[in-house]
Image: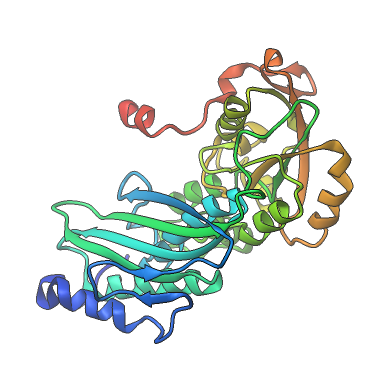
Length: 348
């Protein structure tokens, strides 16, 4: 099997400044609202008048967040920005400027870095984001990727996690569980060409679509009272909303949205059922609450979106706790646990 990260030119042959020059040469000559970008000690840029700054940062570590034997440099570049865009979407903010820092081991070739930035800049262009700076360094053993994304929005309409109220409906965009199943599938295919359903699941994991426009619409129309992106698993992220809003919740298991590909392939991979769909992370869908009187407006938006929206439950008083109900009744709380970086590390 050909390693997608192999190439001809080693990083030491061009050096740090040669690498920065290659990155800079890929950028467009004009970047909106950027007065000084890559090439100085710091970047200078401006927000749109009347808007407030929104910022987020994500760190991705080889063998923790990604496996270079399973993904291409191009797709990893796209996903590196997509995960930050998903955070911005969860605030209902508009992304504007990105900074990226890489710590690179010697085994990674220059061509792979070029492909990584090609993917990153493709995702940036699709969402109106300008790359304005960053840093590069040597890493002795693994690849580290840190992306900072700066965006803007009016503080009066930005959506945080603390606004959910008892009586609100709970919604989720898209379908859940596809990303984790796609990762499991990638480990079993071993270079074989994927079938259509398999390709769909692989795309959901390695090339996720951040719901930026959906988050913006929910915020601008004042529909969402609290919102978060589903990155650690549905119930872990729901717990964050409940803790910040000081509320409980009821989720109806039979309403958890699952794709046709998930339902078709999950039994063969031993991950069937809604339990698998909600335990997996990295779906990068939006989980949000909205008042019941706004239900018709939410569903009107959903009909305009390819991803769709599903009402999965209700916000309850804090004394209610977080409860899952299936056809047999209440489900045990052990299913509420999703991904935790340090707990996962401790188990390894």
